[in-house]
Length: 95
Image (cartoon, rainbow, N blue to C red):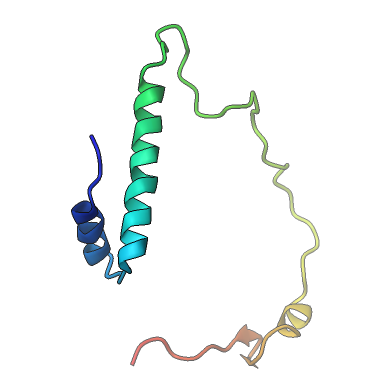
């Protein structure tokens, strides 16, 4: 499988990206290199490798869940460009 400039143009169109001809050529080469590498990975014999979700043997990396002191509202509001009644005030995103 390989990527063509037409494929790059199609994906760029879907993503509403305008690419220069040089960028299209460069992305085509890069994507084909990625596909070639993925095909090489597919050649590996993984029959005796157990599936894993993490490369390191790490378990339960979450800290203990306990109540503790936190930043006060006054301290948090010091960073706010605008606030109202102890809450961050932001521009409306809906009209």
